Amino acid sequence: MCAGAVALALAMTPTTAQALILEYAGFYDRMKVVNKTDYPLVTLAFYLNHRQQGHPCVIRQAELIHKEMRLPVGISPRYELLLPFDPKLKLDKAVLALSVDDESQCDFAMQLRFSDPLQQAFSGAELDQLASQFDAVLKRFAGFPFRFLQPDVSGVVVQLAPDSLMTDQRHVSQRGDAQGRITLTQQQLVELETLRFSEPPLWIGPYIER
Image (cartoon, rainbow, N blue to C red):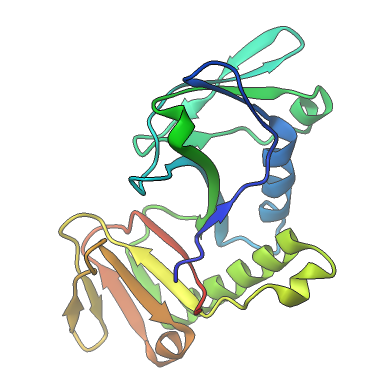
């Protein structure tokens, strides 16, 4: 099971059928953990996941509101929020206002990811280190004493770009599953020397075996 997508417990207030208001503080607190120098390989993606269709909801507009000011927030082509990391916005109790298609079917989520979206070649040791940093971040999110109940990250999940291939040091190529994903367990990572992708992966997230 891919544990890259995690429910995000933020205060959510529906305003109209297509609008949401969320507190910025919840985003800031999670970014603060990931931005520590202990986790240079990890970043966070925030998005709305469609409950029935299983893909990101369409976000039409996003802005941060604080002290009667409105700051536009970037939205990626995959409808991920490009939020600033700003302690002043938390201090000012800023809120995030979103205009979303089919809002009633959307749940907020976050995903831990590899921090370099352009990298195409990896060593097994690098991906094993990434899995270890994913594990440490998830346990920090869980907090004490619940971190001891948090399942261990046991590898990584790679979301391939369309028509992309993964090739190992033996020149054996592999395509993704029906969802375009490849799961690499820690045991596989230990045995791997190098991996190369014909295109940069869309994302690499944590894998937790259930």
